[in-house]
Structures are given as structure tokens and as C-alpha cells.
Image (cartoon, rainbow, N blue to C red; front, side, top):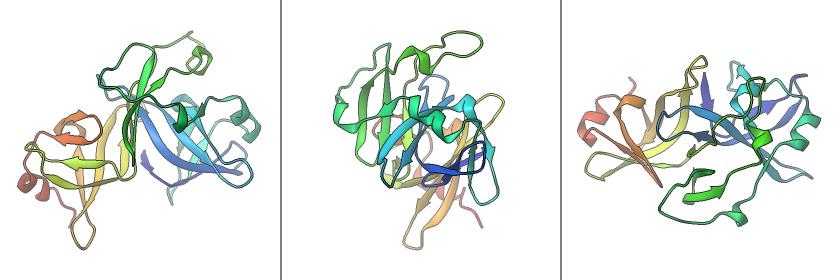
Length: 199
């Protein structure tokens, strides 16, 4: 399932409820725990939707939820003003990576993570459109355009990176990602990354 940043999000009845702002990742396993959905218009807010409530992505990059639009009213709100910058990640916090870099965010209410099996562990990092991608020497390669997720394992399988003057695309397997901080650092050189370019 490919999650394109800025993609339209619809509820279980097919009604639009917002757009994808970023995704929430676990840094150790790179599993995706949820999406941050931006709601515009009169609402103007970002809510965190658990990945378990994402049914899938339709052709045209429309993300479908297993929730009614009114169900989003009780989900945790992502508030950038409450972000505290810091180098360490503590249990109960998650990292959100977006256009402004990395930041620590207090963990949401445990009810956000509760499911039929009980409370799960808190989430950790996020990737958003425009996140910087560097090679293994720190050389800037490009910016993230979208992320591919394996629905069964919830693991991030690859990222699509836009680079160059003509906005060419590179699909980088998650196995070639060394770290996710305020940027994504790869285990390969810029030259090797360019060989992954789509024809």
C-alpha cells in the first residue's frame, strides 16, 4: 500500500475527511503505527489515525478509513505548538518528522493505541513529504515523496525519493535506510542511489 503525502483521505462512507500529512513510525522496527490526517476548511486540525483503522489505498492514491467522519472527532490532535525538541527518545514519546525537522511529542492518550488485544506500545517516529534524504556520507540526494507499507506487517518497505532538476524518482528499499532522524540517511552512496532511479 503506497501512502502519498497530500493524498485525499475518505471515511468508511466514502466522504472526504482530510489529507495525509505524515506517517507515524517505530524507529526500531520501522512499522507504521498511524497517519496524521490534516483536516482543512472550518476544522483546520491534524488528527492521528491508527494504521489499524486504514482499510487501504485506492487507485489515485485515495486513502480509505474504517471510521466514520464523526469518529475522527475523538482521535488525538497533533499540535505543532506542543512539540518539544530534544535529542533523546524516551518511552511514551514519538518523533514526528516533517518539513520542519524532528521533534519529540508527548505520547497520546493510551486509548489511541487500545484495540481488541489491549494497549500497545507507544509509537516513535514519522516521515512526511519533503523529508530530506541523504546518502551514507551525508550528501543530500532528494526529498521523500511517498512511502510504501506492507499491510500485513505494517512495515515500511520503501520510500519514493524525488531528486534532480527534472524531479526524477528513486525507489529506495527500507533495507537501505540507515537511520530516521530529522532526515533519512541511507546505507548507500549517492551514485548507488541514482542506479535505483525509475526508467
